[in-house]
Image 1 (cartoon, helix red, strand yellow):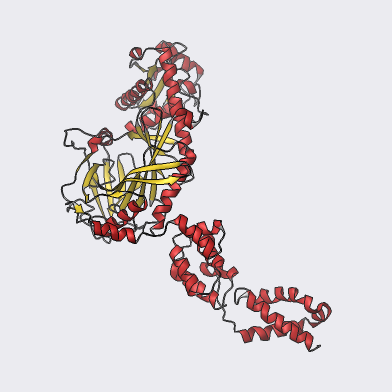
Image 2 (cartoon, helix red, strand yellow):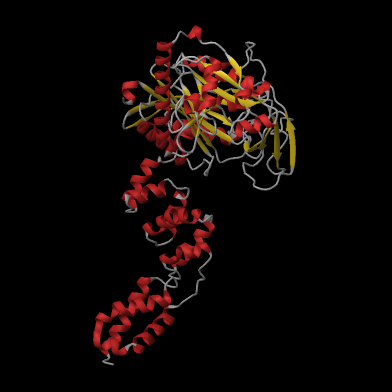
Length: 614
């Protein structure tokens, strides 16, 4: 069944950091990888909205009872990040960049910017909320599949970055908190994984066209909203690799189809009203168990509890299945209670749990062939909480797909995070006055809009005679402006410069060698003077190549000596000897002087030798 048959609807929320200082203070937007200068510890709790409501996602995070540890640095963390001082007036450069991006996306710019507070209770914002404002409305991009609408482009502050998570605490670093970013939200106009990838690439090209966005891992994130037909939407957060977008969407479509199949089968088997919370103490059944996990729990004086799942036999899935409802139940338990694993009847006997123990459970619970069960081991309170979570999730399975937020995994699968946030999480920001956006400001930015990457690629192919592949690489690289500066400054082949700034740069990055424009300037100047060959560029940038200055006179003298040393060979081969001699000369001078110069002088000296009849 294709995506069109299922009426799949896909939309994006793309978050891109801007390359400027922080949004509400004068701190630099630099990330630091060393021990922090100071640490603060906080607890957070949800608050009511103006309507007296508490957001369900915020409430779930609060109920985890986590403590939040924040690491800070004096050079890029101030009292604003610590929520000990009101935010300063917003960064005007960040607003200009956001307006520029909105215009490139064909949006209408608002005439007054109002910041709102969006509740975030996972600890990633010290204040417990994120500030966000709408910059542009009703934008769009054109794709080969048709127009994709972009209802809003927002400017907001980045969250703190998570360093590690422990049992009862999460450690965040405040260097990232407050970096400005744009959030680009599309309508659910996308119908397939392939179209989704094109949309992400096109929006990414628009962002890179400005030359004013940050680069590197984590600087751009794609959240994907996916739904089938009229069913609730699922938000998948944190897709960082473009190549993963189709895989995540395909997986999520299959997962949602699977939930609909479970719904259909469940409602055939039993009435939802007959599905009850029936819990059993199974500790005595496992007193002699060979299951290490259950044995360890009993040794710690913990309990083993089981939950009867009427009508669920065969619907929880086998371990070999990529998509299985039992895995989803385990994710809910882990997120809500911290218990890392459960056992269910579709995967047993296994893991040291014997067939006799399984039969004993079935007899105790009085299970029919259509019934299943779940086992959890922990202290009595947490074990009961875990089974309550399982029961609640299984009860919702009768309704099919439920709206929730899920995390994207590196293998293209998704995992449960929390309920989907509601409108109760938004309320006005009272510490920041509205920012008026004049028509003159918008028009000035409009007149100075950058060349889009699509246009740049075509120009590079025409103007510099680059292949389409190489033109795409350099046009999308962070060095595209530098590329044109070098071509204008030196008489170098554009293909060599583009290759050095893209393929060589990528090769060095894999070796954890970072090269900046200053270092590239050095190598291009040497190349222009003929003091280094193109083959030596990678090693020079690695610091493994020492430039030896060779004059034309020195080269000519040495070539003359080489011809004389091999005069028997030259006398026999005559001018055909130039090929062999070129290899000998280049072995000695490779990387020290341009090969074209070497060939020209070798040709001259060889003709001179042969004409003199030596």
